[in-house]
Length: 213
Image (cartoon, rainbow, N blue to C red; front, side):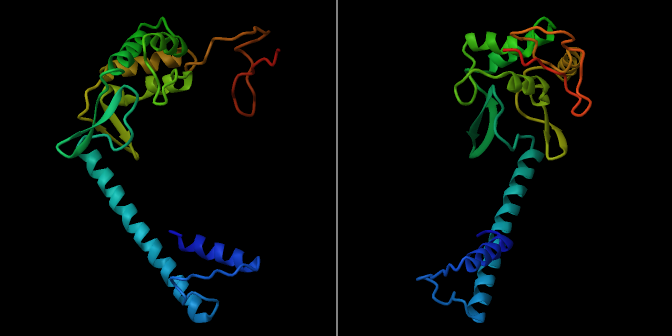
């Protein structure tokens, strides 16, 4: 285990179930007081090593963010690229212009996120898994300031060094359009019903939907 508490919990559950662990490589780990002490020490050392590795990883990600590069997965329309032994986010030759086109289309105010996803799919845009971009993902793309050059990560903001698709002013305009369109709610419905779009749940505050077959 890489967590001392988890390790001891599992050991206690096994002992309660009458299971005895025998290690050929570590014969000193028996049920004696000395064996339990050594077992606890080894578990603590494992967690210590895990914590050290975690700290190094977080430090590396923070340094990458501070230098102006995105420390996470490349968003749709971008790819991770190695330049001078450093991984950076660069425009995807196949998807960058399509995603940018979608953002520009939404800026016109004439298309919904779902309509844009359908049209871009016909033009060749695919998700990371090779499928059509779903409405929720397209909505996240529209709301993501990364496409305007602004990185938000771990409670921090910074203008990135990656190539933006739109300006920050255009990003703000997209957010305004989405709010005006009722938070990008999907309007494609198979059935119509009375008071659609007017009645809200008093518990979750979401719109009621029809269960018509």
